[in-house]
Image (cartoon, rainbow, N blue to C red; front, side, top):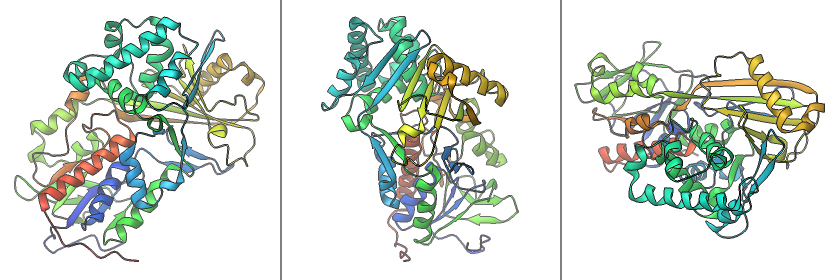
Length: 469
């Protein structure tokens, strides 16, 4: 790694990116590709931010810190992966298929057809047996209304919760319980009586009622960290930049009232640059602000943003208990089951079952012990999939992300800032800034590209840095 402590005036091409997750690395890659010299500083020992993975030392399975699902509509994410050369490590499940189960034993399947979009989802919903024919038609009408409102009257949806919007649209309790609420909680990470209807409408429009491929579930053949971290680091360093993990930033230091001069690291060293991108969560950004910015209204409003937690429980059993890749639990605390053996069936060398369970918007549960959460999940599993009662638990891992995403409630969504700040050379990136989407991988990459574009606009044309082979 090059010497961090600099004493020369920064070159206009020099940019510091604080944070090495999807947002920071996508911003850094976009700038490096445009000829900028980028320094990425990540406080954790490894890159990846809140979207990372690690390998189970016993069985070799890749474990995500949360169940990160990409979808076929993640166009900017795919462009980023193509640029760094890892797009071919993705698996597309082009024909969306989810099984929904209730504690009373009732089952239904949402299975898209081979028709072009959006007819593929129309056919899927019209065959969903857990709703009556009239409820299926009503769901489609409500979806069409949401899409229209997202295009024509988004401001109205921004002030309306998901549950209020669905009530206004005449959706039955069964339709909400068996379709709308599982969809909303999974994609927004928030309870429907708090989540913004505008964000649900955007998800519905982009992911489910666009092209058929847009609704595909997309997974990495490798660990999530291996999908993008090392490749992005190589891309940046080949273009004259550097990436430093385990390099915490203590604070930003101003060079005048309207420009950042450098970042001071926790070891006392400084890194100077002409422009800076903060790609860390709002709380971490606020902790780095110098005193003159503490009372700046733009930044003080960020203190009102609330986090929303996610709990992911990984369970290994001595046998497989379902052949479905994705199972939604209706009427239970546990919301979704991801069958890793079915999702990655082409790997085929592991024995037994490997299941990941997700509880989103888990504020009421996040302080429970790991043992209590495991018991809760296993109890839900046994109720929903009786065949699991005969399976033996081999091991389990509980992961709590207490600040997994920004809460997508109406007020928080309206408070989300854009890339620009009152400081001329400081820009923001992260899944929590305003992208029109809930906090997802795609939102993070969109924000990173937007921050890079803002830097390029400020600096203007530059001489490119040679690419090192």
